[in-house]
Image: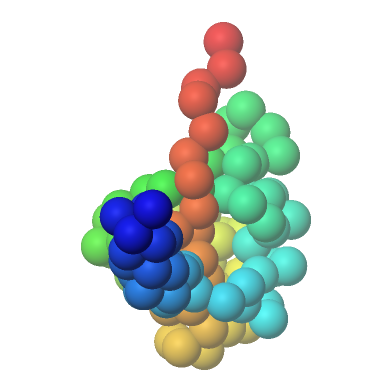
Length: 104
């Protein structure tokens, strides 16, 4: 009985730390969610899923879209409306979403 109480206590002690890694839903996610989905699952097969992507990769890709190295006008336009802090919050959000298995 005591062991189960200690185990329950230990679990309760570590749950807040696990939840702390999940950032809050960004206020400006709608601009990205229109194509990439709020949860990171894209709305069309030719649009990349962002859920669970590596955060440094997302940051790098965003920087390339902003600089024009990746030439996609819709992305450059969408990113131009966001501050650096908003972009980082969105990248963190997508990186922490659970990836979905690929569908054939």
